[in-house]
Length: 172
Image (cartoon, rainbow, N blue to C red):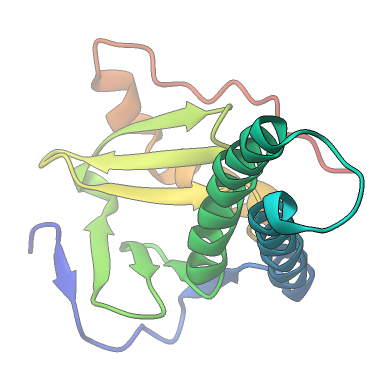
């Protein structure tokens, strides 16, 4: 079996990793606050009373719309992915999205494991180029990282480019 879309149920021995509820609530708060600032920015040019000139009001409205609108968009996308899960066992790794089809990779098909520090994720890439993203915010991420690195150690040693996970990730 190659890397494939998987619709079978998970094996009983699979360990499941998910996002903590606090992460989801934080994202909900961020979306609400950012949307509030977008609404305030859009209303700013039409608010009565002494205030900045009309052209300055429209400039502030545009800045609020661009900055807080972008923030709300990315926070909303993260909120949608916050119900996704990852499962692992001795056979491989599953990405289990809340909506859509799950993805399964066998450990012997993993070509590389790449740390994306700025994006706060670890990417598991198979020989066909498919990716499973493991967000640092997943519960017990250090345990998940350990499992992934242990199962992919032989394969990662065969790759010509460095693919070692040098973590800036630390638990607090």
